[in-house]
Amino acid sequence: MSRTVAIVTMGCARNEVDSEELAGRLAADGWTLVEDVEAAEVAVVNTCGFIESAKKDSIDALLEANSLKGHGKTKAVVAVGCMAERYGQELAKALPEADGMPLAAWPSGMARSWQRRYLKPMEF
Image (tube, rainbow, N blue to C red; front, side, top):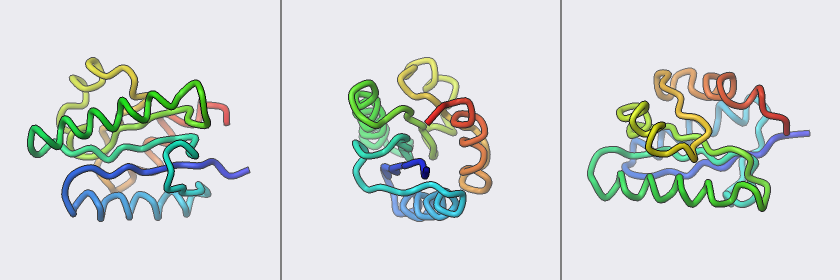
């Protein structure tokens, strides 16, 4: 059975490209990509840390995705992207709602990195 993932992209055009690359890697690894976060077992939020409003939008998107856990399909929320990389440890402490914040190089190896770190132990 295929696992489902939705990618929420915040910020700049570069994040759009990074999300597309991540989506391709995930699909190649057997994930089914869905548009609706509510239909996904895993919500990946590609965060933006460039300007304050983008940071706020990224945090809001993480909290919104987290609110789906427990009463729907969503079982995990993973933060990726420049805000997660730049403020990883601080963000992890401030937002325990996120199940994972991989600090590996983005996007090279990201799909396998966060799957290995955060999703292998999870039962789907």
